[in-house]
Length: 352
Image 1: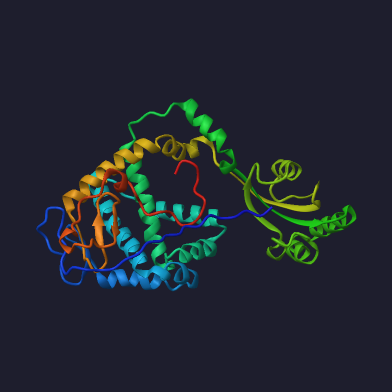
Image 2: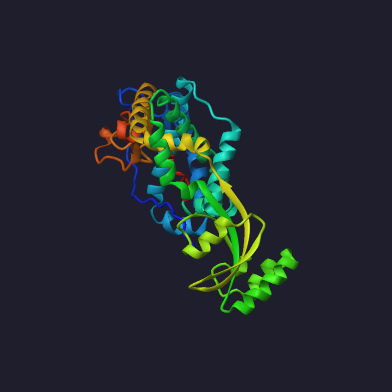
């Protein structure tokens, strides 16, 4: 009954060559002390190295990303550049996000990761330190809001939204439960009587008696789960029960004493923004990338060749060219321009 979370990873290689790098127009050197400039905004080497040092503080990140530190520098610098382009594109479009919206997205990611500590750990293992996580998520929210604005006038039929909702119901109707698994009904009956009489003893009973080693030391906590994640008898029982109740269920694994803790349901109306995003993903990508490409071209992006060069076909910082005179920084291509910072390594709701 365990579930796994997805993780991000990144690889590449790097070196530095020239002393100056030109914009796509070929006439603007990077200013001293800058890792890159985006228009009039300067991303300093100190700022970049702060992100690198914090990002590699986690032992797993150090092992995986630190093995090719130059590649990680390029990835991080590319993210900082894209942040500036995205921020300007949102400003021109009149798009803003509130602290509350960022808080909500952060809470969503925490819930999907299994908690705040788990989210921070997953992010840290992928080179995003805790102090930088909120800004990372802020960019995710801002990119999402920009895509919403650009596709606001596009129609998605109600029937399509209903169909998408039904297909993704496991994400919109979930139960939080905990269980104690034992081999005999007599044991289950005795434990059920104890926890009904003293609900606070459930975690201790799980630690002492449960044969499910994957969660017994966590009070038998199974977290939130939608339909399709448990065997049918267990699923039917927890979705039929009232939150707060205790019950006994027999499955192929044995006898379960179950605490149904909470049920979380998202209505079709509440899910519609996410469903629209999924239905309009192609149009969102096209419109957003076109805008970001234009903004990047207007601003001009320059990269200090010590760190690499800006590749317009990829919208990222790549290894320097062999010929130092070719390290120019054209605007991102449409495919690259649509890239927002990837979300931390947690499952994303449908349609995002």
